[in-house]
Length: 238
Image (cartoon, rainbow, N blue to C red; front, side, top):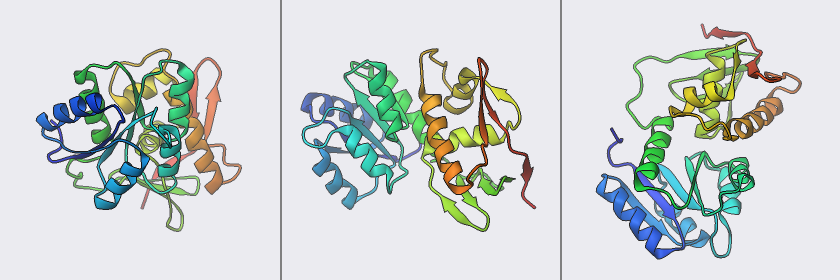
């Protein structure tokens, strides 16, 4: 069931698509704001921060990739990228810039709704769990319920929703080789596309952030023809 009163922002320059998507989402109980370009997006963000951003790739002026990269410098809100291009390179670029998921036009309203709901669940919009689950690894502490990562002593590290989900998946299955399909199943809850490179892009982004905070740690290893292995010893926080 969708979290009540979730606030969405759609940035789409095609008025027909924007009207169609906005109407469908509002009928599902969401609060939806609209913008047609980057300037409209910035104005909307000043009024109210949304719970999720639906961002078109091809926009007049500043395009979706540039907007996504700019937002990721200060924002962690989930971003669903819409693109009329089906080439893998466009999806890869979107994910590399910080998008959490992508959807290729034309798409069905049902698929868009499913992606929106999945991203909101991943962003932990539901009621918090009653107890914290804090784990320690290398020089990091991760709070799975508060969805926070920090180095000891308490230097926070900013992760996107998708990056945190990936790290949570890995730290709960340390020293175990996980295939891309397994990681997609654990983190996204839908059947994995064998050509989906989402995991590889997220692994690359997460590695850079962990390496920057703990140089030389090499916490995520690539296993040839196998997948990925989280190498750290993980223990419960006292």
